[in-house]
Length: 137
Image (cartoon, rainbow, N blue to C red):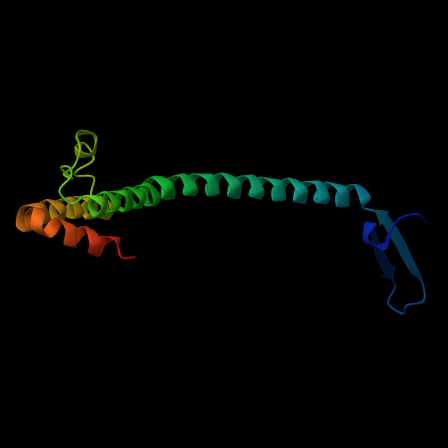
């Protein structure tokens, strides 16, 4: 009567000659409600799981990729502003991460070594040329 078609199970049994038949209608609305609730809980769980995974992944990307690249950009800017200004070798706090096996750390060390070689090789005469060429971007 007031049950939707999706909430009914209908079973019909008939004899061999299809003379007599019997039909039974079962109310499965409680089962459908339970299935809907479990589907909602599963969807909520997946959303929370994906959110936590995204936060964890974002944190790792920031620590392993973004921060070292920002450090390299800052180092190149400092070198371009004043190639002879200060010692661009790794600082004390950077030395503890010196052998972390990261490519970005290797690049930072390489940039620092190149800055030191430029300072020794070109001296004051080449410092202006190096600064001007690095500032052209």
